[in-house]
Image (cartoon, rainbow, N blue to C red; front, side):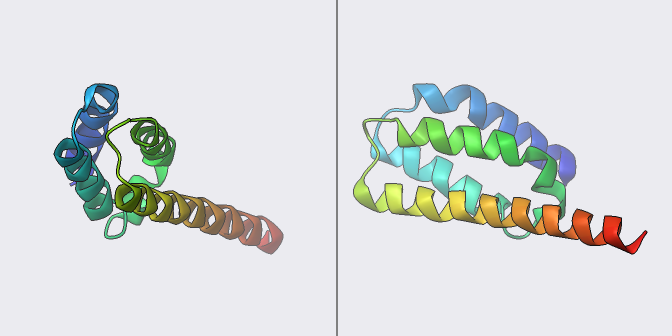
Length: 96
């Protein structure tokens, strides 16, 4: 599963700048939405890639207001994952 997620994110990061049309953008957003929540532990190392894809999609002229709102939600999820990882690491450091 981890390899599939990594490959999918890598592929999407390469094609995201070339996406045109709201349908292609919607598919990219659906992929990110599907990958992020159920595989948080697998995706943690990929968060910078996901955030890069989100930034690229935000710059796409085909993005609708609804899609921009979905990208905002995905970006907030990424931030929450990173914050949780930082909190966990700090608690582990404090426990030592």
